[in-house]
Length: 142
Image 1 (cartoon, one colour):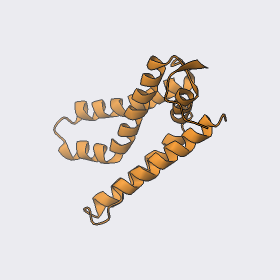
Image 2 (spheres, one colour):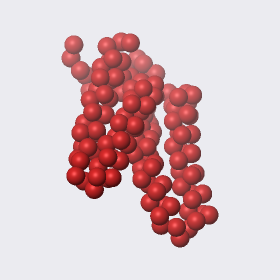
Image 3 (spheres, helix red, strand yellow):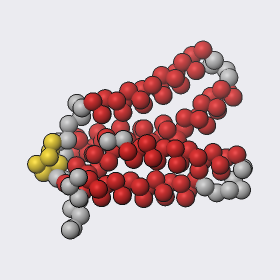
């Protein structure tokens, strides 16, 4: 089985679906929390740092996920199997449910050990490997 690049095909990749709306709502919740923190405590540097420490990884993954799905759906509203597999990998939520905690733990361990335990890069590599494992599942027709 040869992996074709994402492109046009027969599979609809709509953005007007409950999983996409939920993904955007979760990202919106994190952004709203940040805006409320900044509005009520504008000069509290430690509060902002705490927010970024706690939510930084989640925000990064959520922004990536929303942007990735939008790009795929806009580029190929009807996609091929590769486009569909990328789309489903994000919107099913399995990858995000796995990757966010793994990278959060890796990031926290490295931050708390002041860099002595270097876990950020390995945790990102594990998240990438899981992304492609889930992608392969959907690419295989499941």
